[in-house]
Image 1 (spheres, rainbow, N blue to C red):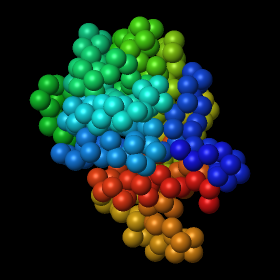
Image 2 (cartoon, helix red, strand yellow):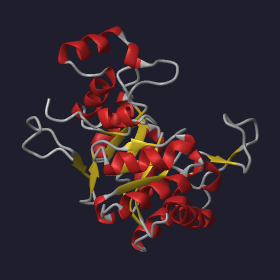
Image 3 (cartoon, rainbow, N blue to C red):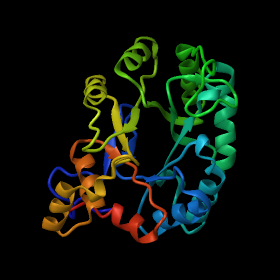
Image 4 (cartoon, one colour):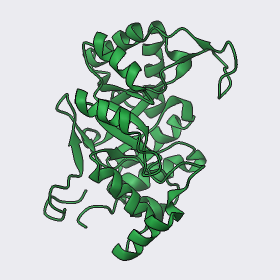
Length: 274
């Protein structure tokens, strides 16, 4: 990690959550990382200095992520210095499925706890539902009951913090009314092409930290080739990806860029001190 001295003024390589735990400012995303996942995770941690790895049951790569984490720890990285995020999938948004889903994730990741567990999307789906879901595949979601179970995972030490992804302001406010342990993090798509201001402001108001995914833009709008971004990158002698990651950090969000290329993985965390 970049040292405090090497960093620009007021720049942090981590953020402090409501719980007092810290979340690294830049993490490795693993969505669609495929068969390279274990290698990417190990490289990110042991060679590039990442300490945050973001994954989810739905990505289908948690076993690979687990192999990468294990290899990094065997190379001398301490578990307590790592921050691992996973997510509860929509078909498991029933109170009695929450704990078994987490236990599967822990088994695949070869860990005895994770740092952050998020509700992946705020709607429940039938088993085997299509994406996007078809008529009749979206079911009643007992948000309060599911959140109680999430809270019990924290009490039992299986998870350090809990949070949500892809929430609307309405759903977030609804959750805040019944939560005994408020969400520590809200993860969402966020980049200069989709600033997601409303939910961002709502999170700030509630003291909920925001993690930005797809920081380089979405498949519809790849911002790495945006003329304005390229102009800034050329001026600073940085890559467009580094400029976009920096944008997220300067906004006060942590960020989880995904890449399966070693060189890009290393570049993506070289965003401090300029």
